[in-house]
Length: 263
Image 1 (cartoon, rainbow, N blue to C red):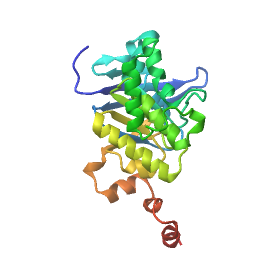
Image 2 (image 1 turned 60 degrees about the vertical axis):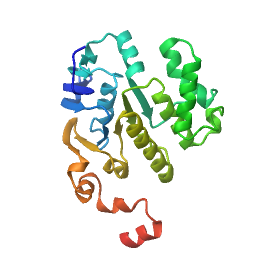
Image 3 (image 1 turned 90 degrees about the vertical axis):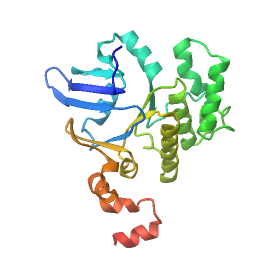
């Protein structure tokens, strides 16, 4: 493995679907991400966000171009090696938590370790308990998934994504099914993990409020990168003008105040 200053890098990746009628979902995407980044990928539906995330996470292969992780070309790996790579290096959080309902929170968190080593250990069980405590579920770890609220289930999914100590978490609309208060709690939790563990987060989101609070915004349109910048390089107003209509800043304030200002 060669040394690289980047955690993740894409080189001119293109994705085309179809053979007779071809649809270009991604067009020569060049991106780099460093360890510990907290980035949001935004754009209208059909802009290529989820396709890009799937390729970054080695869930799909590009039609052309390459993906590199810490100096190793991921796209050159065979399927078995690719599955091992994903399990050891990348955590996933989806809009739908995909917990197994018959399993407890603790067992759901441990599932990636079973895939990795085909068994469990006291060490990994201890780590799973620590992660559940980290996400605020110390007293819920033996509850079945069906006995948890939507927000609690997503917290379990976050703990599960961290169990193998990945360098990077890829999140596809991680707060899409949550109310505004729980959304804020999950966001703060991800930021805490990002800061404490130096885990990189790359989030696909339609939530303008959360995207504007990210450290970096990658905006896509028609399979290409429209904008890519660090929010710290701009004023808060400039970020909001890019990310969302100005009134969206009121979304999390008192509803009467919102109504008065929108009238």
